[in-house]
Length: 364
Image (cartoon, rainbow, N blue to C red):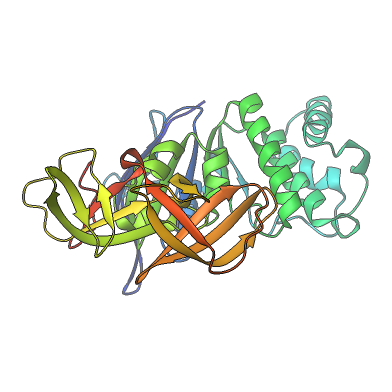
């Protein structure tokens, strides 16, 4: 296992800045996911680690080994960095069989025939593709081709694995299966892994650490729990979560001896003292964190049902109170009529508060 350290990485394409002064450390054996919208710099960062992109400035280390340094003039080519790479497009040779695709790089490394066969067999067994070793890519499904690409990665026995949106071309069922497969493989291989995706479900389910990027900058770096429950800023709060998080604008007031947030007819409880100079504030709460009652409940907020979307295991409810539209997420398959009344309550521990001007979380 090797640690990856990026220091002061910058990369531009003409006038367009892709990565801005990036500092990032991936600890040995960690599964770190870089998450963000298209154009945020996540793939550029991954390609810089692999050696497929040359940064304009900065330094990249694998353990104690410098693989790139603009200051020192060090540029180690991709083939000498000993990293495994899985591309979004799988990058399989169409005229080669499964086993030929997997063993090509091993033969170029002058590994013995017995060792190649051993690695081939083990890597195919790990992704359950042993019966397909003589087939060509055109004879495989998309999911099977992806497994071959992962098998090739395993056979290289690299200490560092890099994956660029490897599941984006698969259907929903296969994506779920492959997520579980990748998580199992990471535990078994114990390789330091950097994974790039725009899919938050992949990031939250696979990762030890999630890095959220936007416009070439790191918005937040933390565990999936922290990213989801304690977003550092409004961008992270809004980008993470499905269905979308609820936002309320307002001011902090003293109501009946208690500090509350006045959001124009909706009053939210505070469990922490906010900075005394807090001006306009934006509160956020996840749809599943709002308690719902189907019977009248004293002191709870009365709302009207405007939309109902059963998804099977859960139901998304869109409700309205005055000018406020609020999204709720309830377990189970719920049947209700539009305009039926509901009563909701906000748990102060589930609320985050942000400065409207800076977008920063006031509790962090």
